[in-house]
Length: 86
Image 1 (cartoon, one colour):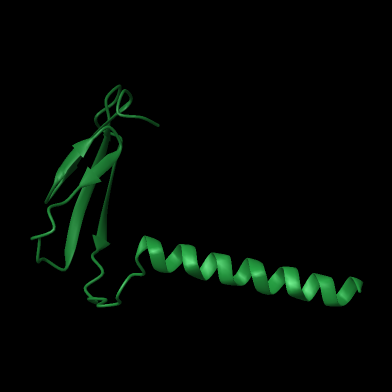
Image 2 (cartoon, rainbow, N blue to C red):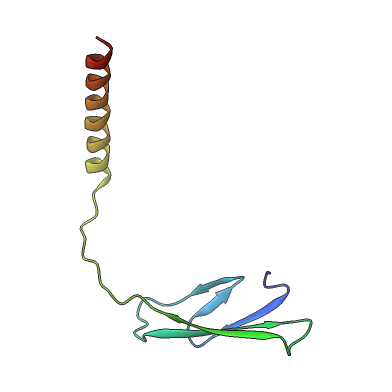
């Protein structure tokens, strides 16, 4: 179903169509979402979504690091293919 058929509300954030956008400063453990059928408001569903609270401090690779890694892997594969066929 789409926003044309249902009304979506939540305890935090803003809906745009069927997507819920929550500010990164939100610190609560959960968000309650309610969906109501526009054609018949007596039909509704409410659910609670828990927010992941683990902070990942993993350093992401730069574009240059990724390109270098891909080139290295491609070269290794080529060498392996040559050995297998040669």
